[in-house]
Length: 148
Image 1: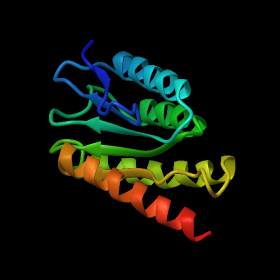
Image 2 (image 1 turned 180 degrees about the vertical axis):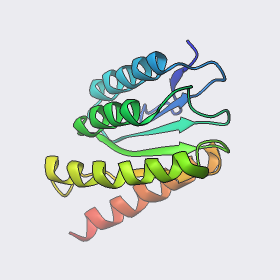
Image 3 (image 1 turned 90 degrees about the vertical axis):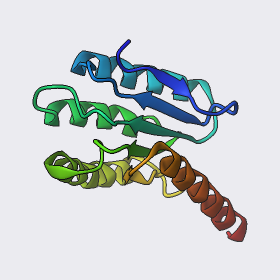
Image 4 (image 1 turned 120 degrees about the vertical axis):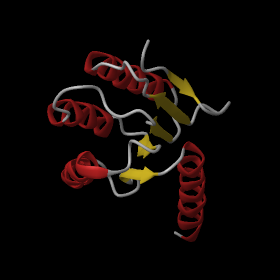
């Protein structure tokens, strides 16, 4: 598979899809479906990372990203989606993805309760910084939950 999906941690709480040079949009959709299936197997928070140092598959990404984002939003235990890597965080495509993310975040907020609504789409320059962001967000969430 040109878009492998693996659990990053033993707790099965962070899924990473690593985009390869020859990844196709069909493989992207298969990876999204696999991530949804994996997240549905567990009852705790799951965050997903798309690790992209090579760029997106060829062709217009808008329809594909919208379909994938809609599926992710419907999986209630997925909290954050992070695009990590040198090719996933710059340029025109990022601008389009940010616009799409804002509209998807609004849709997500309508579909989920305040306590389960995710962070939407984030961009980080490296896989390590994406993992650091997720861990910091989890710590903040736990502190917020203990205050309530």
